[in-house]
Image (cartoon, rainbow, N blue to C red):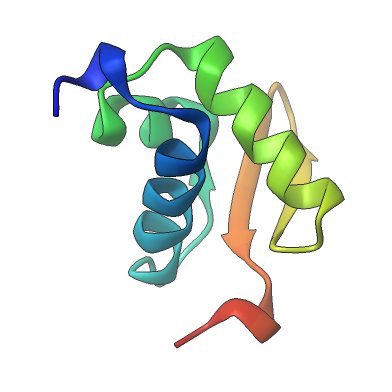
Length: 74
């Protein structure tokens, strides 16, 4: 599947899979680069997943950092 043709649900799943593999919080930019999507798209999906309680985010300086919520770990 080409990166720019990903559906919203596919992106959500890819974000969760990526975060589940990380030992440390990651930035929006790191998520965007890994999934080959724009920063804005990554940010939108991360905020959506945060509202659903699937990820946790915090502002550190000028960056947003993200981790998977504990109940979503595998």
